[in-house]
Length: 163
Image 1 (spheres, rainbow, N blue to C red):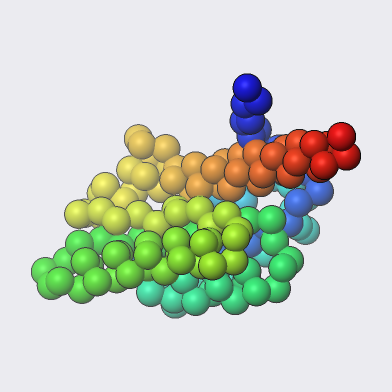
Image 2: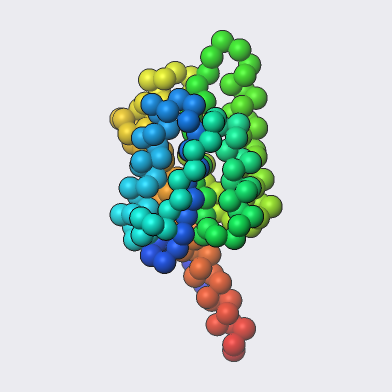
């Protein structure tokens, strides 16, 4: 039985990193972490477009617009929604995540989730380069692995078609 795994190899691929400006003390390190992961794994610096949107709510729309261009192998979305005193957190966090998933599904394109949803700023900082790593880096690695995985799967399908 064939088994397929992707590796974080990005050479020759183009990516978009979409970052929320809201909570920029958190999102800037997430976007930087995503960029560092991409470049470390072979993506040319000029093959990454970084788009800044006002907040997490706008991430899905930007992802859809990027996906429509057919320019990117994958999209990495980063943001931070920190719980406050109102239900606003639940609406923004849930709808942003759902919108990103829909963009991925609708455009058949990996859209990875580097959107932090935390109870406190301290928890967010811990995940933006602190003691829990950098979730922007992790989202970029997931994008790299998915693009490589599906490239391998497509190549296997092409080889089967030739037989």
